[in-house]
Length: 456
Image: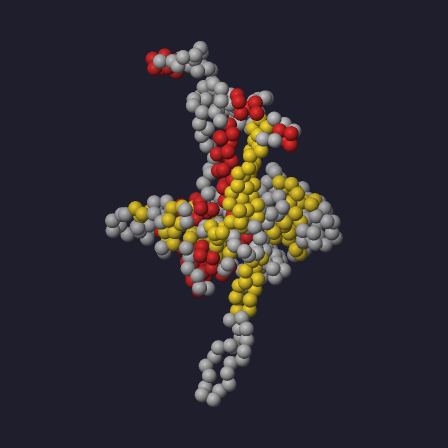
């Protein structure tokens, strides 16, 4: 059929749904293309949805600000590193002319283990859909479209893992050997993650020698563990990550044992960062955060004092904050806090670069923030939220970070693999795979800070 003239187009477009040359539902929202892989059989496949043009527009948030802001380095020939955490006792002191020399002591050297993690993203399409998608009314090159979207999803997955929360409250079906956690809209656990439970009634931490591993992850998360008389997991108990199957999150790094989470004083090994000393993030010890400020699951307003205290603790410990990371809810709260301090001496918009990202445009009077005390402010929609004792989401957390000691170490850059072996798949499908091997590493816990339990 020939393309309609402009006059025909205008006539048909104003005629309504009757006898339109474009069909009855050309502006109707239809179901997104589904199927693993894409097919043209059944209903709702999206291959022949009525469209104008072939571009598939995104209706998803694909921003990956934190991933872009953290420095990326080559992994190197190492499985960990050593950290000096103590100067030695009385090895330096004043000496009189004939006085004895100070006692000889050595530095305390701790080791940290870090191994790469693999993140993968798959997609596929049937041979029939690859052909028919390019016919009139189709969406074009379905493999190219899915490849492009898979690349966005792949980086988004890494960003979400880097910002995942590390705890949740049990408020679903429980049992002696199987515990079903609620839909994890706040803390995001993954297949392969190992967790522990804190018995809120008996004040006991329950782990398992084999590890309590996430065995299913969908609308709910299922944890299977050995039967034990020590604890029966019940509603109100705390579940927290002790080992990640995917990349370590910033929330795992900036935490410590004994901190109050949702009204529960969490027990041993809070935080997934792999410490070769046997695990554990003892409060105020070398591997604890510079400043982990919570309010035991009770929401409070963000204040400049909370941020200033974080900055002060980082500087006291020898660091210099390079980034303030927060959710959009706290971003606007911080802006309102500083509005009362603005001085109108002319406005000049400016932005600050953070890694591969830039802050929102700001003015030096404090309106629409770009920095606070010279520290760039970067909002990210994936920043995890705190929870209360009923597992209700509170406001997003605020992180004050010295990124000189944070890095995403890449062991293998993102690889693309395409497979057209129909015999191996036992189906006429083309499959694609993206995978990246790497891990986020922190080389100084004392110069990172977190503010939790904030109001929305």
